[in-house]
Image (spheres, rainbow, N blue to C red):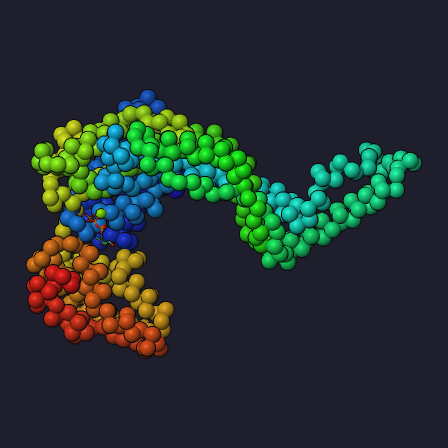
Length: 472
Ligand SMILES: Nc1ncnc2c1ncn2[C@@H]1O[C@H](COP(=O)(O)OP(=O)(O)OP(=O)(O)O)[C@@H](O)[C@H]1O
Ligand SMILES: [Mg+2]
């Protein structure tokens, strides 16, 4: 696993490329990740005793919680899934039950392992794919087709032609020989890439496109859905269709098909299950949205139900999946929420207790905004510069422009709603509104955006609190 080599420090460094500040949160997740790896190296009897310390990230909106999760996902090789708590409903109600997050995690694990295996087998599959391609290009020319009418060949290589062989048989034989020759010629051309645009007819699996089964509510919907899909395919009988594609595309289709047939599904499931159970990570976003202060409010029944349903999963239980039963005991859960309308103490106590590590993300300030505008790999200034460059317009932000926008972001955040770094998006959008609109007319030019430019676009708006409430 790639992550095996990453120390907590290195993990933080990777996160630093995208997330400014929030050192505590970054450290906490880095240590949690590392502990997963440390645990794997323990002797089996102790390993089972070491349960992960689940994390609860608390921070105002737009402070980087989801962003941390997203970046983490790319970083870890372990099965990882990010879900929104609000997507789930209590068992028995229409919607997804919380166990489906484990099923989804297992699906991620399965696909990862499958992709790895496919990568390993790619080399070995190439000759098979080539044969199949030749079959498509020259129907009836393959070895096995020939066998039926081929003449008998002695071990010495002599061809036995019975004297009484009828003329047509002899013709057939000659045909076979020339067919084999043609096949070899085609093979050479194929390897030289001369046939890439040639069209062939392939048989592809029909994409299941039946009506969604979501109408049938209840219990474990996913399992039902999977079952129904298989059933549907069976009933439809034919779930393949012919399709004319270029050799280039056919190769991809055949490659996939060949790899599919080469891979041992059970083995993939076993490895994936082991990985999910030992190193899987579930990131539950928007957990605050299912915390309800007032127990009697309408809707709270279902939300509390979701919390109650989450409990056993976090604690460790067995979840049925398509690929077998998954034990959730050692899966790491990281939950995050703004908790602006509620507090962690509004979660049901049992759930609070299952997230012992609390990390707070700070509200972002002007200096953070400055860095957020410039430093992350996907920084807004970089994004807009690249976008406008496609129109031939070069834009440059001066230091005082960055300074000004950051100041305004903090200012507006403090005076109206604090929406964190998202404020930068609205400000940037407003500053570049006209430029974006007329960029095509200014191809070849360079536009310097300084503080004066920012002020011109924004002062009227910022000064007026009511206006800024709507526009920024
Ligand atoms: N610390 C940060 N460093 C860099 N970018 C950030 C930071 N915080 C937020 N952003 C940017 O702001 C946007 C919103 O951040 P994010 O989605 O992480 O907010 P959040 O904390 O999950 O908020 P919410 O509670 O509303 O879900 C993203 O585009 C992200 O790139
Ligand atoms: Mg979020």
